[in-house]
Length: 115
Image (tube, rainbow, N blue to C red):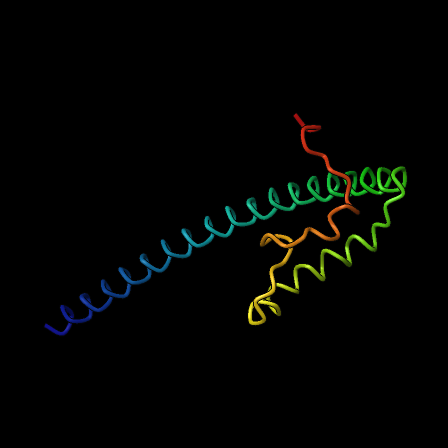
């Protein structure tokens, strides 16, 4: 009867090998799908970067035409974004919280132009 035990062990090894093979095939398919997804995402990112560059060029041209100091506006926005974290304890209202709106006059209004 020693052959019965060996046959059973060989069958268990074959079953395990088949399971592993199926898992490897599934993993390979997943990797291929992931690769395709990454390639599509890379293409979409390239398109978005191109559009962003075009929009930046348009904004730079508009800012130059309107004599807007872009660096000053960017600095002002960065300061305003940093202030709420620092002024919450002091209780001072920022422009977005209903303050006096100082600094808003530097940026031309575009309300109603986009519709």
